[in-house]
Each structure stands twice: as structure tokens, then as C-alpha cells.
Length: 394
Image (cartoon, rainbow, N blue to C red; front, side):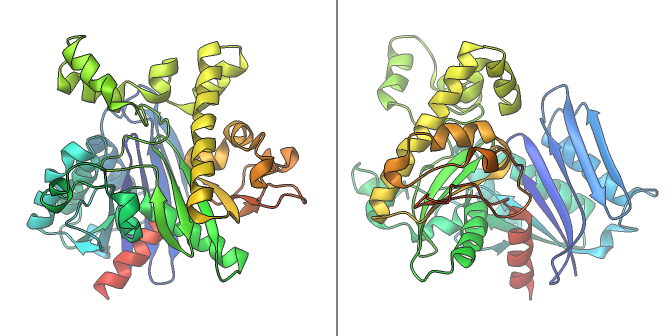
């Protein structure tokens, strides 16, 4: 069975075409830097590899280019869209409605649209992917895998906010958490690797969006993202945690509208707001040249991650391993070094030489004397989505 997986992020689209249940990858690729003048599209199959810089202003254009490559007479891997039996979609926010993988119908799409305001950089992109896929693959089952599902195990003391009870009971306002598909995938890999019955792991997903999860015995018990995907760590253009008094000050005293504040916190803050750059590769390059704003932004980002390591270690009463994953977590030796420096109290000791490699599989980067393992685990949300999609329709 051929299953196409579409993973629309806030500024990128990952895609893989699988033969299931063998988990054989027929082709894979990535569209990145969407909305920038130097957007890139990557495509790789057994016989062909394409890397191009294009103008890709939005997710719809990016998705259409992906489908055109799949069907291309010279480099494509499909003769017809009817070969694809299912399309698995990553959907960021499932709210209180969705806790399991779901076949998409009009009602499901309507619910995803209702959650646009809670994940404005993601759910619209996810929805766009569904609409385009329905058009391009009319005979395939469309399936949604929700980022929030893995965090359904978070205990009430961690997911409930200290506001009047009616807001949880009547309006389902609570911590939901995100990037669950990625955290689930890498934590399962690490638990298998550790081979211990009771495990205490912190997974650190760092990309344009960032989050951390305390995973105790395979279950999410705490996470840095909340009701929406804006709080917690400093992200590409999202602020991360902020004193809500600042929002009232901006509106009541500085004349900003709520829409302007929301746009600022979602699209003009984070690393972009601190440096003028949203791509960490640019920020690291500028920092190396002596750009003080970029140097400070890197230190601020690492500082936030360290604080969460401390709090999650306390929540689990111990720590076996910390795990770096996703685009930045897997590829930035700079961030990993900043995070792991002066963390000996937590048993975290980084091996500088091991840290310099670009890992393609689960890799240890700690010293021989480190009590806590430091691991790089390349995430593969697409495999996880394909597995869950196949299981649902079979």
C-alpha cells in the first residue's frame, strides 16, 4: 500500500511516499524557507535527486510543486495519483475534539478550521495540505494525525491552568502540548535503546517551532507548549513564554490592538525579533562574525532550555537522558554546546568532539563519565504518521 505523508510546518513542508507496512521509502523531500525569496525544494528517489532554489510564497504553491514532482514523467515515482491509497497529514492542534488518528471528512475539516486561532501558523497550513491533497488524490483516504494526541497522558495538575474551573469544564481551556508525533517517535527509540524498565527522558525538539517534553516510562507528563503553540522556548518567530501583563500594557498603554499583539508574538518575535533573522543558520553565521544581537539570542535560547531541563528533572525525580531532535536539535552543535555547558549538577557532560558530528542515526555525544546520556535522535514524524495511518485503515 502506498501512503503519502505530508507534514506542513510553519515555514516548511516535509513529505515522504511509503510502501506500507514495510516502511519502505519510495521518495522523500522537503520544501523549506517558505515565504522567503530563497525558498528551497528538495526531492530524492532511488534514481533521482533534485535541489532547487525557487520562489515559493506560500504552502499551497509548495504542495503543488511536490505533487508535480511525484507525477513528473522524467523524475516522478507515480504514473497516476490513483496509486496512492492514503494521504497522512500532520495536524498540529486537535483541541479537546481529537485524541486519536482520524479519517478526514467535512466535519473533521470544520473542526480543524475552528482551531485556526489557537495554532495560526500551523492549522491553516495543515488544512491547506488536506484541501490540496483531496484535489490531487481524489481516490485516497485522507487521514489526520494530531500533534496533541501524545500529550493526553499529562496529569491534571500539569495541564490545568489556575483560572476559574468553568474555563476548563465549559470551554476546554487547558495545556494541550504539540510536536507530539515527533516526541513520541524519538522517545520510543530512546527507551528501546536504553533497555531499562523505568525511564526518565527529556526530549528537546528544536526547529522553527520548539518544545520540550518530560517523558516518564514512555508517557508525556509535562511539556513546554500549552493551550496554543506560542509559549515555552524561544522559537523562530514566536516569543515563547512571556509575562501576560506585557500584553495588557501594549494594548492599554501603548495603543496596540489585540490583533497587532497577536501577530507580533506569533510572527515578529522569537529569534527573528531579537536578531532580524528567523533561520538559525543565518543567526549562527552572524554570531560568529561578532553580531552581538545574534550572540545574545543564542545564549537566551540555551538559557530557556536549561531552565526546562531543571524543572522537568524535578518533575520526574531523576533523569536518564536528554534528547536533541528536529532541524536545529539534530544539526546545531552550537546550541547543543550552549545548552550542555555548566550542567554537571544534572550529570550532563558533553563530549566536544562527538558533538561536532552531524548524526544520521541515534548517536551518543556525552563523555564516558557523564551520568546522564546526551543523545541526538533524528526525528521521523513521517514514518510515525504513516504507521498510524496504515494501522487506522487496516
